[in-house]
Amino acid sequence: MPIVCDGCGEYVETKVNRDERTRVCPECEYAEPIRMVPLFIVTGTSGAGKTTVAKHLRKALPDCDVFDTDEMHAADWDQARSNWLKVAFQIGQSGRHAVLCGTQMPRDVERCDHYRFFREVHYLNLHCDDLAREARLRGRPAWRGTTDAFVEDHKNFARWLLDNGETAFDPPLVTVDTTGRTPEQAAGLIRDWVLARI
Image (tube, rainbow, N blue to C red):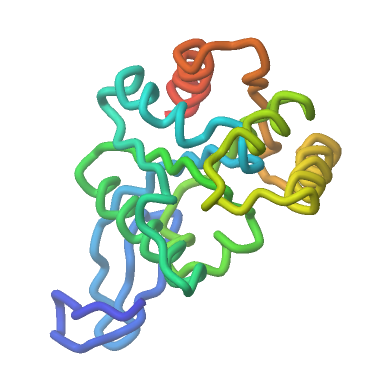
């Protein structure tokens, strides 16, 4: 994403020097120091508990900024995702860390302009068993439009995340199972995961 360079005033697409933690103007080579912090993404299927746990995670991680990405989205999911990474980057420049709770996959996140500004992107899969997920999805209001096909799609997606977490994510995907756990308990496990990686 282009910015106005503090060195020459040109509107440029900066390069990133990861070793020196700077973004560099291609016109004048002005190097602006940046904080390259890790980004944390709590992903998973619909019905796994991401929205619910986000509320409890804010209490468990008062020194981080926790967002439910479903609260701000658009018809253009790529643009919405890109906007979330811009917000997370700006939070990082203040010395804080962002935790994004919402279904995100590496192939989509890595297309975002600001992906390159993070030291690492860590993913946690919020999981629950098939019976719990189906009960949660079918218990939603009618306007949510839960269908048999939707339930089956998310059953398959849950299995895919478990089967491919070691290979499709770098660093490997960590899973927290919410089945039989309270939202507070799940938030505590996520808190420990975040704090171990800051």
